[in-house]
Length: 137
Image 1: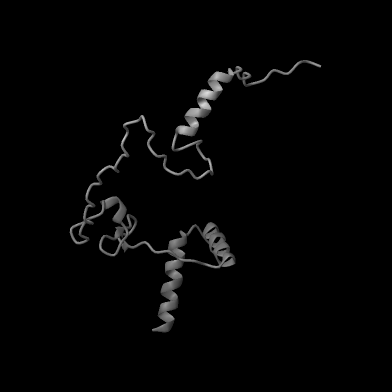
Image 2: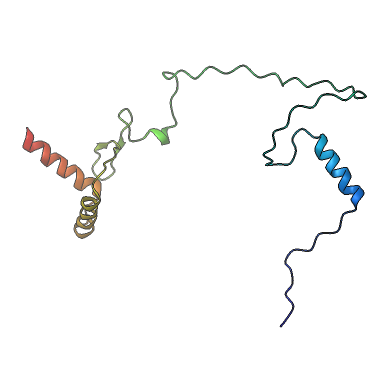
C-alpha cells in the first residue's frame, strides 16, 4: 500500500516555557478562551499595577424615529399599493398586489388550468372572483 499524505502539516512542538507563558497569559485575561463556558469574575487590580477600571464608552443619544407622514418609501418598493397602483401594460388597468392562500389541490388545478389555456394565474383568479361576486349581488 502507498503511504497517505496528510493535507495539513503536523504542528511544531512547543517548548514548556512557551506553553507556560501562554497559559499564564490566558489565566490573566478576562475573556478566556473563545467559546469557553467558564464564567469569570472581574479581576482585581494587582498591587504593583496602576491600571484603573475602564468606564463604558459614552453612548450617542438615540435618534427619534422618522415621522410617518413625511416619509415616502422609494418608488420601486411602493408599486402595487393602494396609493400607488401598478398599471398593467396590456390594457392600462390599475392593479394592486394581494396574496391568496389556496388549498394545495386547488392550487395544483389552477396551475394546470393556466398551463393548458395560456391564462395567467392572476387573471384566472380575478375572473373567478368577479363571477363569484356577480352571483352574490
